Amino acid sequence: MEYVYAALILNETGEEINEDNLTSVLESAGADVEESRVKALVAALEDVDIEEAVDQAAAVPAGGASGGAAAGGASEEAADEGGDETEDEAEEEAEAEEEGDDEDEGDGGEGLGELFG
Image (cartoon, rainbow, N blue to C red; front, side):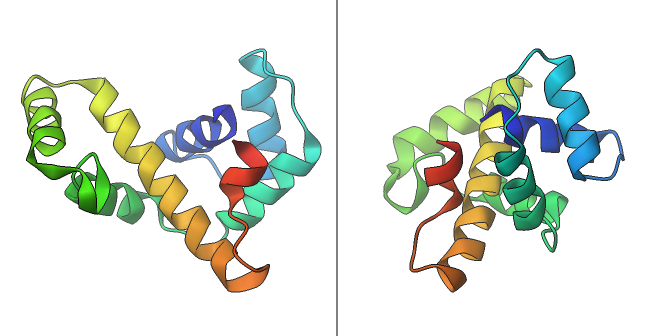
């Protein structure tokens, strides 16, 4: 999960999401960096518009299609209070959705969640 957060930090600060930058952020945070995971994430995010993915994820209820009103209501209340946790969860969901879409096309359905989970 820290790999996705590092990519989101780079995106938020306007830095290019590449192997060197991602590795630097992870090392600065004290994470054990696996080069293969860094390469896989950079490749998966190559054609992804992160801002668009975050916006799409924010429009989806917290529990996805089956989340129901309870989960959506909780998210709306947290958003009204300016909850940063809700934004982080939305960004995480967006990344997971985008990564899953990329992987479904290639290797028989194994998502990046398997690599980074």
